[in-house]
Length: 193
Image (cartoon, rainbow, N blue to C red; front, side, top):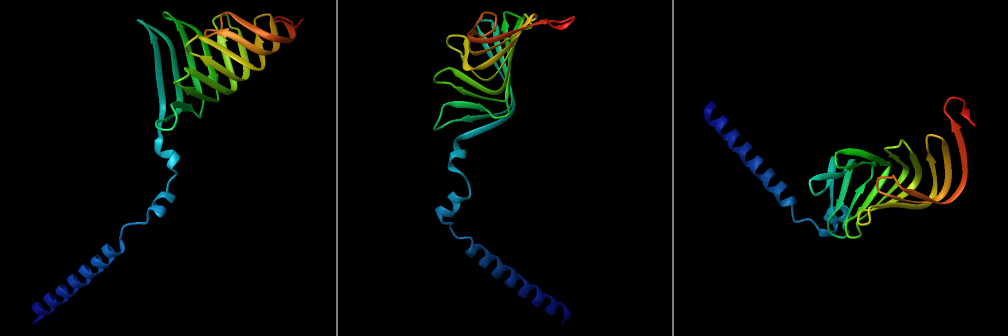
């Protein structure tokens, strides 16, 4: 008698579980597309995100630049660009020698135009230890030039030069300041001259 009671209870439990499962599955009907679309941003669907990425640009057998970024977004459908929302670091080389460094808080690379626009605490240093600082700079990869229309500050071993507008080759070895606002002479041993 006990065995049949257990069997009957198990049978009833099985039927209850089966009915519950049926009701649960019946409740999972096809969702309304508006509800599904509201769960994510369609603009994000064409974005690939990568962390800690390093790109190497080569010409022939030699590395010309190494670009690193903490986070990189690649827009695949609507735009043809890379975005560095957490900044980037670019090291420029001539053959095997490091000739300049570029840092910024944010950058966008437009593949079609071969332009990289950097902004926010832009810092560039060349092999002569000259440092250029600005808030925005554009690197034209086709012409191998960098430029800005914004205010700049250049620190050399002897001077600090303030100006507006800047044009240079990509390694910051030959440059022009469009409008010089002031020059402050510096003597490292005594401070300002």
